[in-house]
Amino acid sequence: MRRQVTRQALLQKKSPQKALRGSPVATHRRSPGSFYETIVSKAGQARVCVIRKVGGIGDVLMVTPALRQLKKDFPRLHLTYALDMHSTGTNIYYELMKNCPFVDELVDARYVEHGSYDATVDVSAVCLRFERAELPAINRVDLFGRAMGLRRISDRRSWYQVEESEQRWAAARYAPYRSAGKTIVVLHTASMEDKRCWPIEKYIELITLSKDLPVQFAVLDFNKKYSSWAAHANVLNVSATDVRQMAALISEADLFIGPDSGPMHIAGAVNTKSLVLFGSVPPLSRINYYSSHEAITLSGLSCLGCWYKACPINTKCMKELDVALVYRKLKKKLGE
Image (cartoon, rainbow, N blue to C red; front, side, top):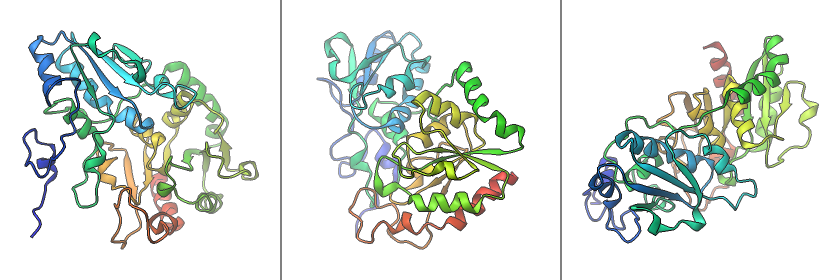
């Protein structure tokens, strides 16, 4: 009989060897766990760097609860966050974090000088080994925190802060529709991974089905999945925005609908109600710390939560997710 591995066992510092073969903790020339212990040994006045070389918006934000906890535990800590500042061409990860009050410095992850810090920890590759169908679903927030040696994180919601000027700008974009009594619903059309995407035809069907509702859809179609948004009177195409404008639009909206994606995590961080379309990724690994979020999945499918395996049934979990179900959930949210 195969031994059952619990979520708690996977996160414990001294977990069973079989469960934690290949610890996710990765520090520079230090043993596992010593990142946090180094801070303690210096009475909280250490200079440390947390490195996230890869990943998208969601990963950058899901590291923030652990960073916030570090600063809460050690107010005199000098905390540097090293990010990918080259692969996107627009430096969006710096833009996401540039006004973060508990991070002292942002640097390019390619050029971290480890000798300049008392301790560094690279959390770039700490999650994938735990993201398998046979293991309990664990939110990446917890995995990042464990990699830093944290025993607890008091606030697990990702951090993001919209500036007042950005709020005013977004409110102005929505003002004509608000004055007409419309509810603003942001639709995000695609995740960075095709396997997690709801087909664009489903979004069009939802928009058409909703044409008699007091709803104005603000569409984020960065992948240009559809070219005729202007043909729909209940659609405002806001795809031509930068990352901070996008975040402000999500913050000022009444509801967000989309797949497991970076914008979905922004919605969680700014507490915007959300309907999130899930298939291959278990909802508990992404949105259980967002009280504003509700998962929608295709019921009766045994292979849900398969993670990154190649799909033998043509991504049925997303392609057959019923528009009528999403529409009913949308109408219910409008009545809340």
